[in-house]
Amino acid sequence: MGLNILIILGHPDRFSFNHALARAVCAVLVENRHQVVFHDLYAEGFDPFLAPEEIPLDGRVPAPIRQHCDQLQSADGIVIVHPNWWGQPPAILKGWIDRVVRPGVAYRFEEGDCGEGVPVGLLKARTALVLNTSNTPERREFTEFGDPLETIWKRCIFGLCGVPHVRRRMFNVICTSSLEQRQEWLAEARKLAAELFPAQIQA
Image (cartoon, rainbow, N blue to C red; front, top):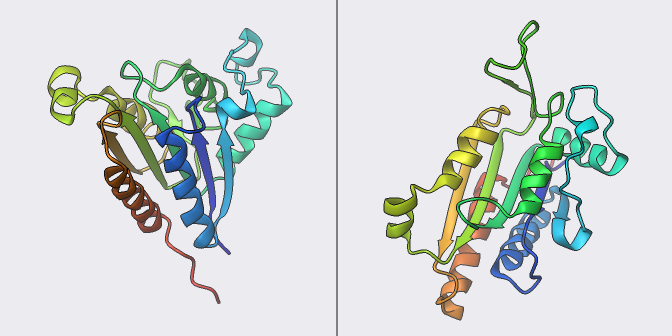
């Protein structure tokens, strides 16, 4: 029996390198006999708008969002694929975080804590893989911007939600890359996914 792996893709262009990365990782995970749930947020028309009634712990959560929440809760591993836009995920993916990575699903506060304390992570997943793309050279990314996506995913999201092992890889520069370079990057992504989520030994 394989692992339950959740893949979330946030890029509007189905011909993008992000889509190629997501497809490559998905193929490896299926080959390794894992159960994969794949969400292309743009293709599915995911609604990123967080309504006020959803915010409370016991808030009214629409059925489609509840399904995403259930899939996140049951995931043994998580893969996130998106471009670096202004040092952040695309708005549709930020909306997914706002609506799905919610209290009671991904984290909780201790009894008596009104929200000012440190959350207790609830996610079942022990490992997450984050694949990003950028058109900024690596040296400038670090010296000028400090790579904010590292903090967002490793510390602000997965770290607080109880996922202890997070691997992240930024592929750059995409706009000037050759076909050969992109093929090498896809091979690297497949290798990363296979290492983090190896094939399960059959009894």
